[in-house]
View 1 (cartoon, one colour):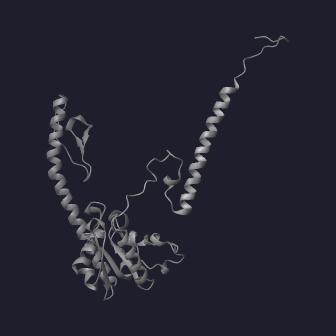
View 2 (tube, rainbow, N blue to C red):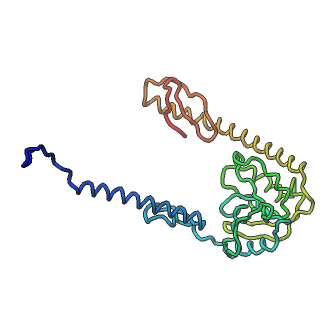
View 3 (cartoon, helix red, strand yellow):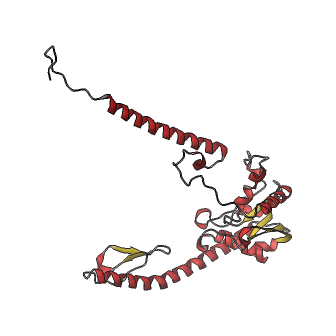
Length: 285
């Protein structure tokens, strides 16, 4: 198209589209900025980021657990721990469930936040962190020998299958039965009755634990893990062989070219199902 001066001119882009693009970029920038600020505020105030994020961004991220039915008993537990525990008389919790755990004891300060939960020097802590998962933290920690007071969940409290939490199960059972490390403690008679029928039983150490006691506890943990793993393998073999046969039979009915027989089972928790000559997974169980 030629102008009045005879020079060639070209259509110019409409400003509407660029404005729309600019608004889109600005909108995304605002969302990012709001999310980033919410994350910083959550970190600074120990608040769930989902509770501070823009509405609709994390629809379930900020939802709390349903109110517990044992708040009065938790308050009594907090008062007892505050009066009994100190850096020279450390308290420990054996358990790993939402109802009771060592972490629960560490977080009781939130019921009446008069102090900071942070300690500049670990030696000033009035508690000892226990291990929860075998494959993450290994056997019960050697620091357990520093536990002057032991609070144990009864029944034993876990949140995973036993194969992964013998580091909680073995010392908890010994405490409740008075054997192994439990022989070094006595029941004080103090029991906190928590929700879901769980008791938090208080023990007081009467004779010290030493390195030999902790080494023996680690050996018992290894023995327990080996026994559980062997049981899982036997159960998986019995169940898996029958299941593999059923799946392969069904697969061969639908795919007449498949004439293979059930083959090996891989793993304990997840069984990959193959039919001999088909060379591809046909299902997972």
